Amino acid sequence: MKSYEVAGHAVDPAKVDALIHSIHVAAGHRHRWRDAIAGLRGLLRGRAAVLARHDFASGRGEWLFESPSSPADSEAYAAEHSARNPWFISSLDYRPGRVMTGEELLASHALRRTDYYRDYLKPHGLLHRLCGVVSRRDNVVYYTDVLRGRGQPAFDDEDRALFGSILRHLAVSFENHSRLVGARGENRALRAIVDRMDSAVFVVDVDATVLLANSRCEGLLEEFEGLEVRGERIAAASRAEDRALREAIAEAASVPTSAGVEARILTLTNPRGLHPLVLSIAPAGDGGQGVPGATRPAAMLVARNPHPTYDLKRCAFASIFELTPAQARLAGAILTGHSLSDASRLLRVSENTVRSHLKQIYQKTHTHSQIELVHLHSRLCTEHV
Image 1 (cartoon, helix red, strand yellow):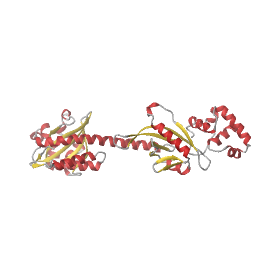
Image 2: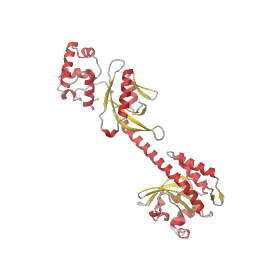
Image 3: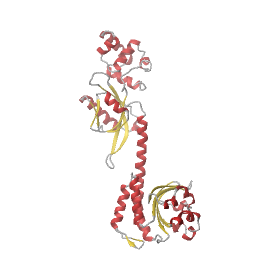
Image 4: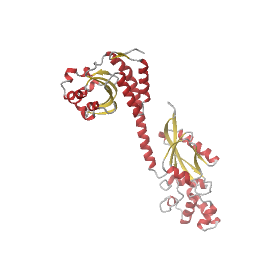
């Protein structure tokens, strides 16, 4: 590494390496950014340092991270004073990757005549500025400043060169930080939306590892014994159904969400014999990253009938297929998991009558089994299940 000298003092290359490391590990962590900015201030022997943004359209600015964290010097760069800052006269000077001194933007003798210097810099003993442009998005610029006092030497070419070698790392880490913070915000918004859903919703990766579960899931797992979370993986109680569940998840996770593929319907039995669970399994896109550069395709599982009830007045299934009242009552019993013998006792009719009604239901709905009937109902009557 090239050797540098700052304000008459040789710079230890190990300190530069340590600062660069602290900058990269700061991505996604606010408290670590403050440590990184403090390290930059110390390395360049500044009185204050800041990573901030400035909007040239509105003339307003905002501190993101600063060192010291709450000094009186911070008033000189506070958001409400940005519009009066003469260092932001021209937006053309702020190109990403550029390192410049305050004197390049405005000579010191001219700066001393401004209200900004008199009201905000001079009272805190500040004068010299070294600025690095981290990034720019239209009229908004993100930059890092290191400030020295009147009794300190102005920033020279050695300072500029050292700052320039560090600025590249600042730009990369800050871009990563912005992406991480944005992703977290999207995840919080997604979780809030999913939590408002009436159904239990799981988002799982291709290996059935649970990535996200809304607040309804805990109640579902307590109520329905045919589905569980083993370790971190969602699983069906039955070995055969678990195999089918894993295959359905792997199939859904492998399909891009843009493909427009319909959800796959899977019915899980309850070990206690009543109230099967209907799961809708659909592609959910990229579930995030497990290791750097490795994506985790995901699927979304929605419990379509977590509550074992059937309201003939709410559900349009009977009217769609013109079921008689007796047929509708039998369909309701089947859709809530009752066996034919259970339905016979529940409806107080013979099993032969139940079988006769069921045959007529199959003919009207063009189905051939109770499972097909459940699948058809879950596809057509999503507002009910």
